[in-house]
Image 1 (cartoon, one colour):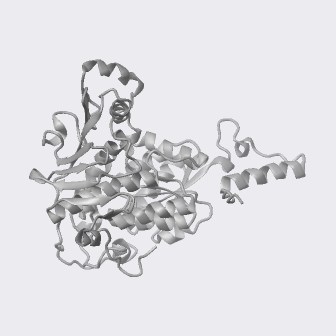
Image 2: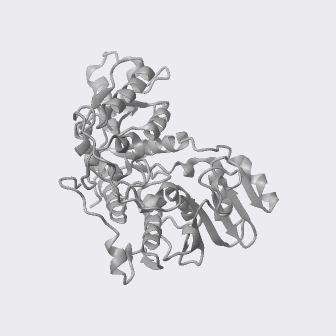
Length: 432
C-alpha cells in the first residue's frame, strides 16, 4: 500500500471553495478570493511566522515580506524590543495592525493557520526550534548553523524527513550567481579533474568563561530562562541577549568554525558533488587550518582568512572559496568578483548574474518548494552533510590530532573521545 500523502491547508481550502461554488450556485465570491486581478487567493497564500528575530533575521524577513503570495502574521521572541520591532516592520508593510506578538513560541506553533516559520534565534536554539516547528506541522527556514553539534544536525534532518516538512538552511550563497558560476565550472569538468578545495573560516577559538552576573529583567522584557533554553544555565548579562553571545562555547558551534564554514565548506561540498557524504579524514595543521580528504581523493582545506591566509582574500570579499582542478582554478567571494584560469572560462559567466549576499533568491526558492513540496537548494540532507563535515573538522582542531569519520555511520572510527564530542547534554526540560 502506498503511504497517504499529507493534505495541506491550501489544498483543503481550495477544495472547499470549489465545493461552495458547486453547491450554492449563484453565490458571488470576490475576485481576490479566487486570485484574480493580480491578487493571491487565500488558498494559495503561504502564512508565515517567525521565531527569534534579531538583525540578521530582520534582513531575511525583509526579503520574505516582499514575496508575492506570502503573508506574515506573527512574531515570537523572548525579548519585548525585538517583538515590537518586527511587528512595526510587518504593520508598515501591510498598512494595518494585524501582526501578533508572542513571548512564547509555542503559542505561535499552535496556530493552525501558520504554514511556515523563519527561525533566526541564537545558534543554540536553531535545531530544537526547527524540530518543534516540524512536529507542529510547519515548514522551516532556519538560519545557520542549523545545529551546534553533530547530534543536533542528525536529529534535525531525521525529523524533517520523518514529518515530510520542507526545510531550507540559511546558507544562501547556493542561490547567489557568482558562487553558482564557480560551482558550475567545478562540476562541469571545465577545471579538469578536481583535486583541492579551499574554504575560508574564522580564526578558531573556544571561550568557557561567564560574563559578570546582572539583575534579570522582568520576563516580559526578556525571558532569560527561555533565552537560555537547552543551553547550560548561567547568570544573566545583557551582552548575551544583545547579540554578543558569539564565541561562548555554550551558545556557539564548532569553535566558531561554522560561522563561515557553514557557507564555505558547504559550497566546497557542492562543487565536489558530495552533498550526500563528508570527507573521511580531518587533520589540523599550522595556523589553525584543517585539511580534510574525501573518498575520491579530493582535499578540502579550511583555513582562517582563506586560500592566501588574508582577510577578504585580496578583494573577493567575505566567505571566499577556491576550487582547483588539473586544468584550471576559480576563486570567488561575497564581493561578486571572479578570479580564474584559464581566462577563457569567463565567457560562461553571463548565465549567472546575481551576486553578493542578498538572500532573496534563497527565500524565493524556499517558498517555491513550500508550494511544490520539492527539495530546496539547502534541504535538510544537504545541511546535514556539510554541517557534519564542519563539526568533524572542529573536533579534530579541538583534539589537536587527525580523526577519521565514517559518513555512513556518522561516527568517528575507533575514537571514543571524538565520539563523545558529537553531542551535548540539553538543559531540562528542553528536549524535542
